[in-house]
Length: 477
Image (cartoon, rainbow, N blue to C red; front, side, top):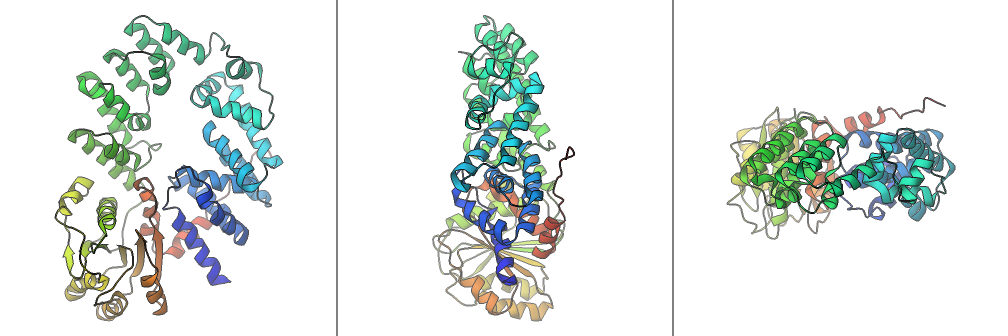
C-alpha cells in the first residue's frame, strides 16, 4: 500500500503538467482518488499548488474537493482559497461540485455567500467584479438562491446601474462623442479593455493609449493580439506604453510565466515584441527557483518525434535561464547530437535546434556516451521521449555503466510525449533505478510546473515541501 500511495502522489504531480482546457473531468478522478487515499497530502498539495501552480483548472478541482471533504481542515482551507478566485472561477467550482461531486455542502454555500457579501460591502470592488464577471455573478446568486443586496440587484438583475456605478460609466463611455472624453472616462474609472472595446465603435490612438495605461501587465499580454489588430503597435506613443507594460511584466508577481510565450506564439508579432515577451517568460521562470544540480537534457529526435524536438527546445530555454550548475543538452536517434545555444532565450534554442529533423531509430543510451567518455558528472537526467527505445546501446545498461565509471547515481526524469509506452520506466524500475515520469499532454502554458520538480534535490524533498505548506485557517472561527 505504501508504494501504491507513493506512486499515486507522483501521478498527481504528473497531472499538474497537463492543461485540461476547462475539461475538469479529465483530472477529477485522480484528484478524487488521492483525496480519499491520502487526504493529508492532498490538502497540503491543494494549498501549495494555489501558491505555485499555473493551471486554473487544477486549482478549481482542488478547491471543489476541499469544500466537499469530510475533514474540517480541508473545508476551512477551501473556504479561504475560494475567496481568492475571480467570479467566473467561483462559478466553475460550484458547477464542478454539482456536476462531478454531486453536492454543494453547507460550508461551500457559506463560502460563496461570504464571497458575494464581501464584494457587495465594497461598491467599487463589486462594480468591477460585476463588469468583468456579470454572467458568473448572476449564476452564483441564482443557483445557490442567494438574495442580492439592493445595489447588486439593480446592477445585475434590474439593468438599472446607479449613477455612481462603473456600469453607468460604461454607458457614458458609449455615449461620449470625442476621443478626449472617451480617454478621460477610461483613465478616470479604469474601464477594462474588453468592456471598452465592446462599448466603442472605433478606437483612436488616444483611446488606445488610455486603455493600455489602465491595463495591468498581464492584461496587456492577454490582449496583445487584439491590440495589434486595432493598430496599437503601429502608433509610436501607444507602442511605447505597451513596451513599458511588457517590461513591468518581468517583475509583476501576478504574471503567469508562460502566458507571455503563448502570446508570442499566437499573435504574429514583430521581432522586438517577441523578444520582450521572451524576456518576460525568462524572468518569471527565474522567480520559481534556481537549478543548482548538474543536469543533462536528452531530446528524442527519432522517427515521428517532431513533438519531442519542439518540447525539448522549450524545456532547454526554460531551464537554461535558471541553471546555476552545468547543463548538457543532447538530441539523439541512434547517435547523440550535442546542442549548444548562445543564450538562454527561446530564440537562442530555436537557432540551436534549427538543423535537427526527426528520423531514424531510438537509442536513448547513446546520449549518455559523450558524458561517460568525458567523465562529466550529472545529478539528474531529463529525457523527452515516447520511451520507444529499439536500438543499442540501451539506456538502462548504459546508465549503470555510467554510474560505475563516474561514481554517481543521477535521478532520471522521463517527460513522455506522443503515443508513449512505459518500456523505459519499467526496465529502469526493474534495475532499481530511481525514475519519475511526467506526461506532457497539454500546452506549453503548463511547462513552468516542471521547475519545482527539477530544482528540488529529489521528489521526496518536493513532497516534504508540500507537506510543510500550512493550511489556511479562518480567523473568525
